[in-house]
Structures are given as C-alpha cells and as structure tokens.
Image: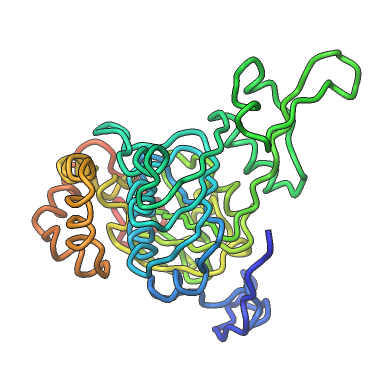
Length: 339
C-alpha cells in the first residue's frame, strides 16, 4: 500500500546512551520529540481511504483514537486486524469503514456487533465488505508484513471454506514436494497502525504489560505508527527497563498521551473494564436511531468524554484494577511504587 507522505516535521534531537546527539531532527522516525495531540495525530496519519490496524484485543484497545476518527468523519477506511470489538462497531455504524480483513468482530462479552451486522446484511449506513481469515491467519498476515515478505504459508484454514470466500487466500501444493496443500496468507501492510500502550517516552519507545497480541508485528508492518499511551515518561525510565519496550522508537511516528485511552475496555495495571458502559452501548446499538443518539452523546473530544464519565467512576475503575492486576514494582524507578 502506498506510504503516506510525512512532510517535514520539526522536533528535538535526543542524545543516545553515550550522550551524543543521534538522528536527524527532521527525520520521520529519528530520535526526536514525537509527542502531539490526538486530534492532530488522527488528522495527519488517518486520511480518508487509509488502511488501518488497531492494537490491543479486548483490553488496551485504542478506543479514544477510534472515537476521534469518527469525530473527524473519516471515510472509506479499510480495517486490517485480528479480533476487533466496540471501536470497530462504532466506526462501522458511523460510516467510516468500507472493508474489513480479519478473524472476528463483535462487542465481545456483552452483545454481537449490531452495526457490523446491519452494514453487512442491510447496507446501513452502507455496505461493509468482509474478508475472513482464521485467528492464526490474522497473526500470520502481520508477521508477513513485519518480515517484508509477500506471504506466509500455513495449514490453517485448509479444509474450511475461508479460501472460497476470501480470494486473497491462495491454496497451493507444497513446492518442496511433500504433496501437502498450503494456504498462502498475504502480508498485511496497513497505511497506519494505531496502538495504545501503558507508557511511552517522547521518542516513541512504547512499553506494554500483559498481552502484547500482534502489536509488535503491526507496528513493524505499518507504513506509519501512532502510539497513544496512558502516560509519557522520561526516556531514562524506559532505558532502565528495556525488556518492557515492545515497540521501539524507530517504528513510531507520533506519540499521544491519552489517559483512559482504552475506556470502556481495561488497560492492564491502570484501570478495569467499565462493563456497564459497554453493556449500555450493546443495548443502544441495536436500534439505528438510538445508536445515532449515542454518537451525539459520546463522540466528543477525549477530555469532554472523561468529564462525562466522571472522576469518581474512573477512580473506581482504577481501584478495581489495582485489586487484581496492579503493575508489578518497577525496580529502579525512583519514587515509583507500581508505575
């Protein structure tokens, strides 16, 4: 897919570990300050007609970024993904998405994806094209993209009807002579990957606790990468714990600090899932007019969104998460007990 033109970006050059300045201050992925705001990042890196991959899976989902995509009325998007929940259903219902390639969609524990079903079956608000792959196949398409190879062979999806309905999956006989068939999964190379993490520095080094899913592959397969995070921390903090850095700065174009950026889903170690909130979404998305009223109420700037959720409710979600999934102590971070 055609890379998006970055244009010139001014920024600060950061020193490397030896204290020597490294990288061009205007290079698209150099050692520079990549922090920006959510509105600017989405406006710049998610143009109409783009192909997009989202990070997380039933947790750490970049919900705030998806709401901003809807708020900016992006259109003609192709979503390349693995399993995708509420944020995808919202974008489909808002008319942002034309095509989906992946393994599963819905709203997970609460309800089916009513907007997705309405778009596929009734063309409301317009038709959604679906191309299925298996769960394993979706991982392989990002692996191929990250490796910069055109496809990855697999036995997954053989003896199913997925290749019949997805013309991108080609079944061939093993060229090395085993006589077995193999399904060739084409590489996913999205124009942009939008990934939410627990913390990142201004350079774009992104650290993840818990399930990484395919995020490390998506970041390497995509032409552009937008990282949203719960908090931006000093580079020195990142350097003390390099094993937690799942996405390095050289794979990142923009960093946005978005507290509660996964709400209503959980973010490991930061806050629990707001089950009543997305249960209400599941109910209201059943009816088209009720869903449009939901959009009017909740598709707002993220700061306004958090105000409407309420500080007390957000604090309760933090407390609930701390009781079961608090982050482990990060040794060496002065003044940090659990973060």
